[in-house]
Length: 573
Image (tube, rainbow, N blue to C red):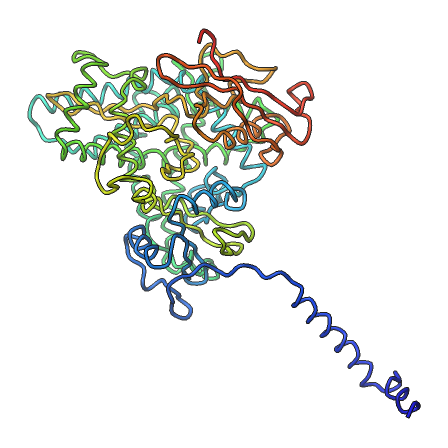
């Protein structure tokens, strides 16, 4: 018996050499299955067809279609769009998890194939993946190019262009001539943005032709990007360009590139000792590229940022102002109150200026309500998960396309009373943050353009006159008070967060502030900000707390400290 047993265990037979490792591997694999933690399930969702998934059932009005599905499947549900998995979130709670709790995981966007063509391979701030290059470009755009000092330097350019438009509309109104308001608003916004981009660079005689050329290119690019591309749903087909959208996009993209080259070369030919009437954004970008060796800004980066400013600012602002004007025309009582406020604050014989904006509380409420009822991007810009994450108890796998249904969130009856009604009064006296950190009220996230693209409608009793400005709301980043004393030795023009009211969550601001500190990123912040001292501005009733940033490592430009205290209280208050 014993000899038979040892014979069975003998390694002399060839089949035992193969069988033994197979048995051992199978046992270990089974043990791993038993001990491996199980991930939560995928979100629920409607059934789809093989290969194409839910694509055949989509409605052209995606935001309303998704709102209907949310009523059936809940605030988070999944769809199969061709070869891609998509998840839609439709409540403030799920939006907070995506945009704040797991912000780094969902920081990237799902880049359309045609979108890479007109952004120099996707090196703009919108499509770049989250990382060092994105932080560099964001720092240039937000902390430097859109700082208060830079925007103040281009104020004269904006003011002159806006006044030209106001005079045109006033003349047409007095003569009783019809006006294509949408076209005029589009042209006004286009001219304002081009003035800010290179108003001090392009000669007056060339400005009209450059603007006309841009208008045609923008219209063509916007049309192409708006066409659904099968390559975006089946990436393996991208190389074939079955619909020819990439080929169509190359033509306007090349024309835009030649136009940029023409303007940039003209700027480079200008004698540095003769800077023109004022510094525009192009001058600033070229200066950073040439003089700041710590910022590896390439010419493609410069052109991609200019493209973002043009494509990202014109349609968004133009559409919002048109919606606001339509709401005012359809609601005479709202229009009358806006007119009365303008008469009281500005005066009947005066023109609205940027310093007036913070005092026009009702008109500001009209714009906030317009953005609630008619969000710029009803589904924001689709995000893409860089790794798996658990949201509201469901697993969202890596490389999932994530939609945030702002349209549905802005109509959530739990957050808004009578959400389908246009009622600016809901924003008067309402406490909270309405600049993008309140997840029941979402604007463009993140928004590089909101600092100077806040549109306000200026109405007189005789005619409709349009006024656009960047609006200096004190809650917004980079709205440093003029008499502010810079803490420590920080460069406040590029590193200061802004005036922060008491009643908002400060952590996103301190995380962004930490990114501006030398050798510190948002992941280094280990302590949330906590207000410790408050002082109230009698003009705005805004409170300015002292808050703290604590990091894992010393901060180079803060005397080696790892704890920085920021006092937001302005002098003289």
